[in-house]
Amino acid sequence: MNILHHRRRRFAMALLLVSFAAVAGARAQNSAALSDVSAVNPNFVNPDSVSPDSMSTGSSSSALPSPASSSDQQTSPQEPAADVPPQPGPKQLTDYVEAGGDYLTLTNGFGYWAGGYARGVVTEGHNILNAEINGQHEFGDGGVYVAGGDTYNFNPDWYGSLTVGSSVGGFFWPRFRGDGFLNKKWMAHKQLVTALGFGYYASKDVHRDHSFFVGTTYYFTTPWILEEGLRFNVSNPGSVFSPAGFVAVTHGREQKQYLTLRAGFGVEAYQLVGPTVTLNDFQSQTVTITWRRWVGESWGINLVGDYYHSPYYERGGPSIGFFREF
Image (tube, rainbow, N blue to C red):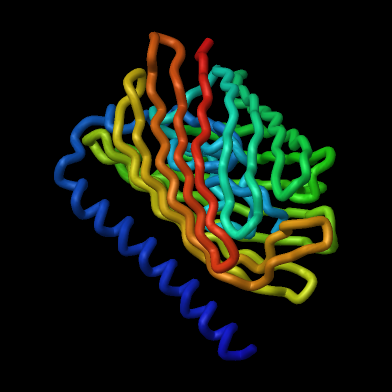
């Protein structure tokens, strides 16, 4: 047990060092090129909520999306890259509605996942309000998850967000979930954003999760965005430590398209695959490709391809959604 804890601490430290190195490299590469504040809109914040990226997919009960995480499913806190705070910048939508569905197949006799979702975001003064409803069929059971949240702009440099949700049916959905983030914009053109977050997840069995998130987003002068984040999760009973991280790269421009490649990796303390069946203490990885394309002036399509790997099963498939701004 001590050897396992030491390995997890070394894994968490490696994730942290990789994140710092990526940000330092990005700053060094872009510092000479920054000359126009239009490289990033420092007053724009969008809480496009998960599926916190998305939400990557996965709602095993073991935790808001950007282009890096705009899947339609509610991510479990046990899966890599689960916690993603709302990010500033022109890459996301405000004042819009979106609806869509997904279908994913699982190996080793775990069946399929399928469902649909609807979400919306409305700006009111300093507040950006978001809500979603998500119906899913997973592991032979079905249920509906409902969530709502608010992102508040304190001033041009600081903003915070809070999202809460609950569900009806579906052993894989949380009984209650809450996520809060505090964000700060840095540098002369506010192109670097740091985020700190805390999450609580109460599953429909005895498991309870507390997580701490740290992440960064960097906006280049060219149409590139780099995101990375680390989540340190403790699951009870047993106080099981399960660190995870993600890296995402986005290319594109507003009113045209955004293409995002995202990779998540980490440890899952547990994953519910049945009302009384749990997979415990294993590593998993996710890869997600998201294409958000404007078809008309105020509407478009959102396509997501998702792949998940663990020692127990693999999961993959598409989701499709349509959005409209107002």
